[in-house]
Length: 241
Image (cartoon, rainbow, N blue to C red; front, top):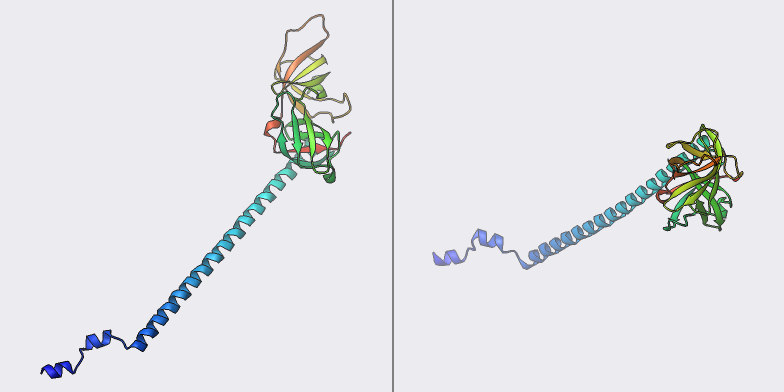
């Protein structure tokens, strides 16, 4: 009986022990499957990275187009509300940190059509005037700069004066000849005086009125500019008069 048992390898044991050639075949198949799986994963990762790169590029391009549309809309608004001479939009790259000398640097120059003495505006109102131009950049002297001088009048009230920049980001109107009494909250806009800026562009709001001298027919007052140059992302340039 023992001999008979020895002569017959149990079925479970014989099925669990594969011949060497079958074992190598199984190992080879397993290795091939693993290698194929790794290659598939690597290929999927590369494809995913490529698609992610394409998606980010598409998003960047879409944002660029959104910004260009915003600039064109501002240009159109200024052309309709301020001057038909609105020529182009220029990105702001830098605003001087000094509160005494306020200059705005633009990322466009003569190659883009920028010229000296072009008024710079925004939908809210006047920014300043182009003073220096290179092929690729331009510098705008803001109305809050002490070297700035803009002929102004009261919106709906007339009168004539000159707006000059003062420290603190404000403007002082000097030598103003009243046609109607100036009051706090009145709107000040460009006049035809000086011939540099189109008439009717918003400059700012009267925020301070010094005591009046009854013997002086001309007065001075302080104006809060309609545009904060430090917050600008771009400006609209008008053809010089």
